[in-house]
Image 1 (cartoon, rainbow, N blue to C red):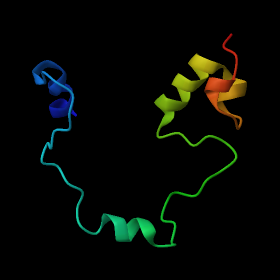
Image 2 (cartoon, rainbow, N blue to C red):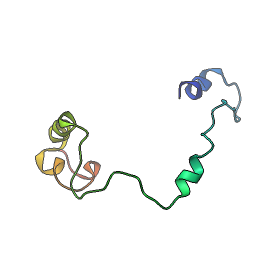
Image 3 (cartoon, rainbow, N blue to C red):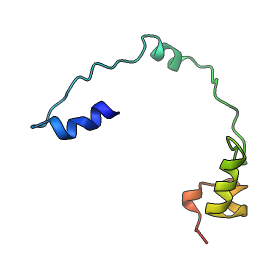
Length: 77
């Protein structure tokens, strides 16, 4: 990310710059497999820890922080 952002200061004309980064070879094969290894999804929010839950309650209120729905779609109080 830093290398890409540094281009704002060093590039003097539009173009594509190869930063030398590549994805590991098997990433695409893994992504195309039909298995879903993600964490199961639920109708209620799942928080990383209690601090995250407290931050959601503080920002959006207890009703929004514990119910399904995107917080950005909910009015702030």
